[in-house]
Image 1 (cartoon, rainbow, N blue to C red):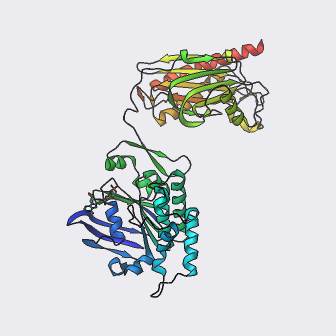
Image 2 (image 1 turned 180 degrees about the vertical axis):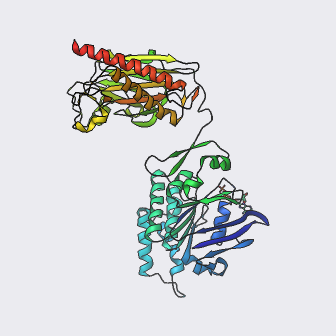
Image 3 (image 1 turned 60 degrees about the horizontal axis):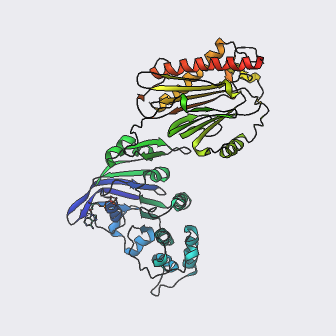
Amino acid sequence: MISVHQLSGGYSGEMILKDISFEVRKGELFGILGPNGSGKTTLLKMLSGILPLHTGRILIDGKNLKEYSAKQLARKVAVVSQHTSQFFSYTVKETVSLGRYAHQKGLLQSWSQEDEKVVKTVMRQIGVEAFQNKKLQELSGGERQRVFLAQALAQEPEILFLDEPTNHLDLSYQKELLDSLKRWTFENDLTVVSIFHDLNLAGLYCDRLLLLENGKIKINDVPNEVLKEERIKEVYHTNIQKHPHPTVPAPQMVLLPDGAKQSFPFEINETMLEIHDEFITLKSPIPLRTMSSGVIGSGTGWHRTFVNRHVSKDYNCRNHREEMATYLKGNGFDPTETIGMMTAVNLEDVVYSYVDSDDFSILVVITAGVGNAIDCSKAELHSYEVVPGTINTWIFVNGELTEEAFIQSIMIATEAKTKAMNDLKIRDKITETIATGTSTDSILIAASQKGKQLEYAGSITPLGKLISKAVYDCTTKAIQKSQMRKRG
Ligand SMILES: Nc1ncnc2c1ncn2[C@@H]1O[C@H](COP(=O)(O)OP(=O)(O)OP(=O)(O)O)[C@@H](O)[C@H]1O
């Protein structure tokens, strides 16, 4: 659809763009990225015929851009630029109607029913219909932005060039606009070439990205290839981290503010634990990086409050998430900052242990009921029935863990728990074989992310050794305590 061959050019003899070649396919949403001054707007101006090229050529549908008349080009291409010099005394509807110019026929340029229909449709789709009789000068920046987009779409172009379309738009309109653009690309085969400053939006919505650096193409590829952490750090000269989007397979870049890793003189230890009849809690002075399977706060995140709540043996487990959130709120905990677990174990039987190594330390807190112990290798012999009897394991680490270390911590803690059950000969009541856990066990790893960097937590690493010993010892004692209570 668009072919750019060895394009070079700029302003007053100064070459801003140097030897640019790429192609955009029909129906693609194609993003142009690059730091300030890298030449994005200059490229868009050349693509839309506003700025002449010095050397090279641009073909649209195989025909050289230079050979299109203004009206022919306006039927194919619409442009929404950053600084649209429109007459602000026009109304919204008049402004959108200007987009129909290229479709009007004859000397008198009469307004047809088709023109009216198209204008009304795009005004509705873009959400500017409600203020169609207002003057542009009476609108907010975001509303005006949408009017110019509606004007471009009223042109019914095959290609849309956009300079930062989401600038001025609030979150919901950013999403709505990009969702609509994406829909138009596959429903109407509209080709969209757009400049983006927001790498995350570009990564979420674009089919391909072209990254410019000092007027040259750094890379032109699919978002996952272009948005590589090292490349973005190098081109934008800033510290970022790449993460997967939580629900769709798109890369997301997060900024790392200076000072984020500054040390703060504190340490999680047993003095922060509060043990009540109804719950055990630990409140951290700073949010901790967490990975957990808690009823509340599961997955990965940052949390500063941890609650292990006692529930009766006949607690109704339906809607337990909602019920737990209400419970936490009722007790003054903020569910968004809290990881919450439940147990039917008497909380007096909690066992905890603070242990330190040369330059990091851990606190392990365990409640263990084994009435529901299961041999996981024979789990298929069990019906799906949630019975009280749970081992809740909390591991706090005063240190900085990698993602790998988080996962290995969970593995090693599970191995240690299973070994404790094995040594205590805890049996699965149905299979009568040695149990490996209970069916509702929960785990939390919470790290301060300050101090010593702990890359691994396998069984023979310093962190792995500390976790496995502490979890083994605490689980053993906690099971023994709850068994003694049962026996009376
Ligand atoms: N009209 C102009 N006359 C002369 N030089 C210009 C003109 N417009 C832009 N430039 C120069 O061209 C270079 C590239 O500018 P351009 O606007 O294309 O960058 P950009 O990547 O779009 O930047 P930004 O992200 O800041 O919008 C800059 O050094 C700029 O100063």
